[in-house]
Amino acid sequence: MLRLGIMGGTFDPIHYGHLVAAEMARTEFALDKVLFIPNGVSPHKMRREITDAQTRYRMVEMAIRDNPEFTISRIEIERTGPSYAVDTLKELRQLYPHHALYFITGMDALQEIFDWHKAKEILELTEFIAATRPGYESRDFLLKIASEYPQFLPKIHLLEVPALAISSTDIRQRVARGQSIRYLLPKEAYTYILTAKLYLPQADCE
Ligand code: ATP
Ligand code: MG
Image 1 (cartoon, rainbow, N blue to C red):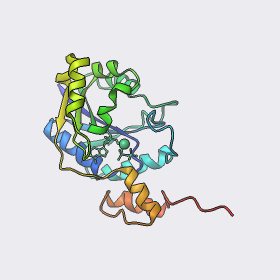
Image 2: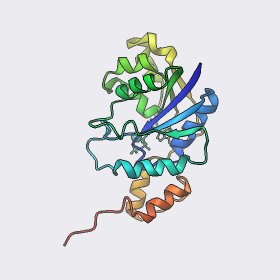
Image 3: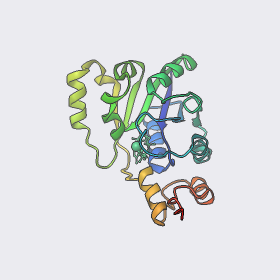
């Protein structure tokens, strides 16, 4: 049985936290490949302005280019409406009939799974690999899963990754404040952000 890792996210922008989680998941769980799936319209981020999908896609593409086991998929950005994980997983189930699916998330994202659209169906479709992330504990979450969906507990795997307190929010804020983001993300994505002038504060219209 082949194993497919699925790394979904807004990737606004992609950074080393995402890449380390994906790479550690790949090696620890013997995944044959990891598919990076930038969301179109994230149901979790309806409130803030998100960089257009094509730009986020390009940054992911350049950041993963040097890893032959990492690939990128357009399935969420080509779908209209909110990018629900359940729809993506159903599509991947069809596209990869011989693969076991492993959805890679940070602990922060997995903790919110009870609020996701069709959470139970998601848990039926895939295994989860949850990477530790500074500031997010797993104990309460696991207790909740154990009491509400005990049958799914064996499908949730925790993954210790060397702690990286990097987030896209922090990167965007640093750019807006004129601080450096060098070394927080791959060089190509870093250069792209500077060249395309992403994340700068809106110029005052006077
Ligand atoms: P934002 O701050 O905009 O929410 P983010 O850094 O959390 O961005 P997302 O695109 O929201 O990045 O995350 C995609 C996935 O990657 C989520 O499952 C998230 O938990 C995980 N992730 C992001 N950063 C890290 C990190 N530093 N360590 C482990 N997992 C991470
Ligand atoms: Mg996030």
